[in-house]
Every structure is written in C-alpha cells, then in structure tokens.
Image (cartoon, rainbow, N blue to C red; front, side):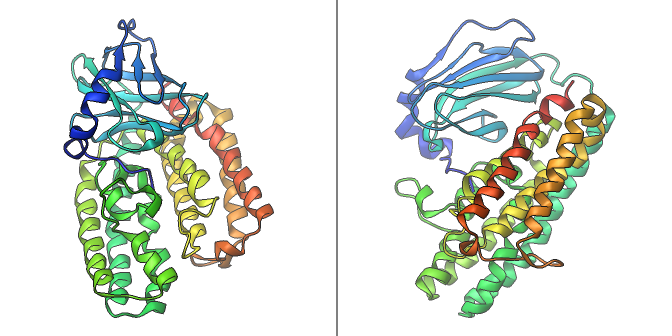
Length: 378
C-alpha cells in the first residue's frame, strides 16, 4: 500500500497553481550528468530540464520537514521510476532508463496528492542505449511473472468476495490474507498506473479529503473490527473484483525496464519497513506477515531475474544479496504455522523484540538492494 496519488484531473484544480509556481528549473546539466533534485515542503528544484535518452540518474535531497516521494512520470501519470519515503534531511540516488519523449519529475511532500512537478524532456532517437540481451530476457520474464500473479489473484479474490457476499465472516477472514499475495508480490507494477492502488489497497489514514474508502482494507475493518457484513460491504466486494480485473488487464501495458525492476524490488522492501513491520498494514486482521512474505518474494523474483547481469557486473553485491535474502527468508519461516502454506502467526502475537529482529533483517537486505539498479546498468 502506498500513499494515495490523485490523478491529474482530480488534483489539477486544487494543486495546479501551487505546483507550477513552486517548480523551479535551473540550468540544464551536461550530457551524462546526474539531475540534482532538491525537494522541500512546497518546492521541487531540478538542475536540468532536458537529458539524452538512456540512463538517467536523479540525485535527490529532501530539505523539507516531511518525508517525500520523487517520481519520473509519463504525461498520463504512469510511473517510469520512483522512490518513496525519502525522509527529511536525507539523500537518495535513483537510476532509471528513459526513451525520448516528454516526462515530469514530481516531488510529493507527505507522499500525498498531485505533488510539485517539473517538466523533463528526453531527447534522442527514442531508444535507450544498447544493453546486455540477458536484461531483455529478464524484463520479458518479469512481465510474464507480473501477469501470472494478476491472473492467479482473481480466483483467490473471488473466493474471498463470495464469502463476504454470503455473510460468512469466518470464511471471508480465512480467504482475506491469501487473496492479497499476488498484489503484494508485484505492487510496484500495480502502483505504476497511479489510480488502481488507491481503490483497492488504501488504508483509512491514507485517504485524501473526499475520497471514498474502498478495497481490501475497508472490508478488513468490517470483518475484524465491526464484525458484520452489510449491503455496503457486499457492494464493495463486487467493486474490488472489478478494480482488480482492471489491474489484470493493464499489467501487459506497464512500463518495465531493468532499472524499474531493481527499484521496484527496493520499494517492496520499503513497503515492508514502513507498513508491515510496524503492523500498520493489516491493523485489524493482523495478517501482516502474509503481506510481508509476498513483498519479499516479489523483490527476490526481480533480483533473481536480474542476477545473471548483476553478478557479472558486481559479484560482491550479488553475494551479499544472496546472503541477506536467505537470512530474511529463514527468519520469516520461523513465524509460519504451516511450512507448506502461507499460514503465519497473527502479527499481534509478535513481540516488540521480534519485530525489531525482523526490522533489522529487512534493513540489512534493503541497503545492498538499493545498489542493484546501478549494478545492472554498468
């Protein structure tokens, strides 16, 4: 679950004047230079408005008082690449691959709303630099993986929805966690479309003003907190299936590159660190460890597909990633009630000390994983 993004249409009236007045473009950088991005609570300064096609690096610094998110966006708000949860006073390097065309760099203070945006023109023949053919194979295989996850999610969600509509609380609770696995494994792909995630995976505290609460977490609250299923919940269950079918149909159109795979893997670990380890994601159902496992599996899949190139370019990094993925997988297995399934201990039973151990393992993996994108484009 990410912070909500309003579409351009929905956000333009409220944010256009602020965003346009706050975006400050500086002189263009020389070819090959990183774009310096300075984010703050009401501005987004970039050191270039034009770069050549190929590898683009953003050197981001958050000088604001809020955590921010920085994205490279297509004009229709699809995400090329992004970094969430850049804390106040911190820096991050984001590497992406872009073709010739028009884009925007967006800074989203508080990780909500339309954000503050700067135009970016990418020049050239329209294609990125020639790359290792193994990376093309990795992208194709990952695209198929993402599609398979979407295809396999729908029947599980339909089982969950069937129980909700039948008013069967116990059956719905049992089906809830497993229905989310495919989504959690490939969440960066789903989030790249901008409008689907707020419909199906937003938490109550992530709602924008005037936004109707729909999706998994709205139904989660009804099942575990309210302990009742009414006509509204049954209607919302149908809407969940409709929205996820929309996601299923769009997966094949997602922009996927080797760097977006690598950055997406890191984002999945960030999802774990900011939502799952804290217990905020499934705060009523306490099925956080199922989501946790899904995020880790998705990150590991992206890494394994990129590993042939990453290991060639940076053997030490690949060795460290192998080690840290294995350590985190082994730690998660301790909380499985059934080693052959996704039946995990209820997260409210996990102690403060155990959560700290999980958090440390996530951080130990996240640090080398943040270097994967640079390794695959060397």
